Image 1 (cartoon, rainbow, N blue to C red):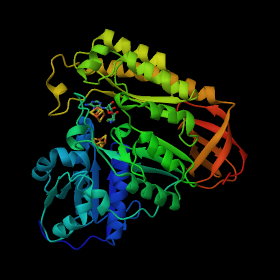
Image 2: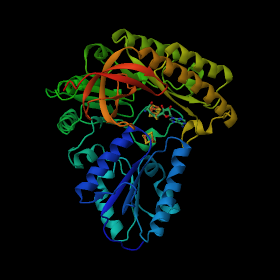
Image 3: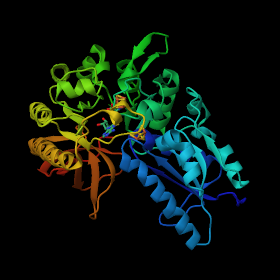
Image 4: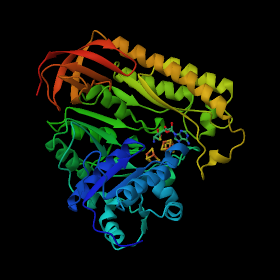
Length: 447
Ligand code: SAH
Ligand code: SF4
Ligand code: F3S
């Protein structure tokens, strides 16, 4: 590679889960601290960070087409943008990217991006570098402090996964489970609050496995962390995602009934309604244990909205297995859900299992599943009409005077009237669609 001028502008593009969104924000803060400015919307950047996702095949392929597009746009403008590939594809396929995509000068894994400034220096000097080390917790200490925040902020509290579901790349791309220390998290939550956050979503690949010690040295779990953050006066709402059914302890269940700031929403992926398939997936729960767990959550918080993740077409999934999934969906009545066609990932046990399901069958099952999930989501939204609730205003809507925000149950709500971003307003819900609700402003901002 030839030496280039130090970059003046950057753009970070994040794909995949919310933890990648969080990492993308932290990378942007790190680059800004180096004196590199965010590129103006619509204009080419001198440095592009692709913060990638490896969870399904399509997500990973996107990286190469993006690299092609960025270098082509650069060539047309007579520039050579520096390209960094970060995130889970970088971790899983770092060497392959370096070999296949000469336009890429940096490959940096999810646990190493605090070292980007040094890598940029090398790239400017014409040297390509790869850093996919997994130093436990070194990253967070090396990142700049939080100074800006949207009203709804993410805070990564736990990383990595030890569950090894047989279809999943996350234990390989994100490494073993680690919990960030309580003091660092409390400090970051406080800074986010000072920077304008009213809601904090605690993030982890397996967030309910978070463990730490509180300020007095007592061992606590996620419920204890939520309790501590709920004491921050400027934080009005707390959420957490994503949990595994195996790690939901009594204290966390109780917290849903006891902590008013903990929102009545739980994302608890189940993946399949067939015990045979759950065993093959190495999920360590059954349909029955999952349903029993949900009952306990609903006892603690009767208005709890539930959401889940589903995979159709896991190897060996029969029509009867799939029918079990549809039955589970009807039994739970999810308020929202994500559903995916099984995608074989290199290096995972399921990729080499016999009886891979044909793509047409997966398509057809996904359609039926999404039909059922869509009906439940619409029914949930319709059942909210006529109720009033607090909405956290997150941004302007498309129409003049219109605002968009979230209900406690994570529904998108739009309304018109006197409000500002970051306000918590009382809204009466007046109409429901599958993906959002319309509301009427009842009174001006509470705070
Ligand atoms: N740690 C979280 C999220 C994992 S990734 C959890 O356990 O729920 C988010 C979702 O992607 C998973 O819940 C699963 O539904 C889906 N997923 C993961 N690997 C997949 C694969 N190989 N093919 C299709 N979907 C997959
Ligand atoms: Fe993947 Fe399973 Fe871990 Fe979730 S719990 S990240 S699906 S291995
Ligand atoms: Fe994707 Fe990595 Fe998240 S694979 S879903 S970005 S943990």
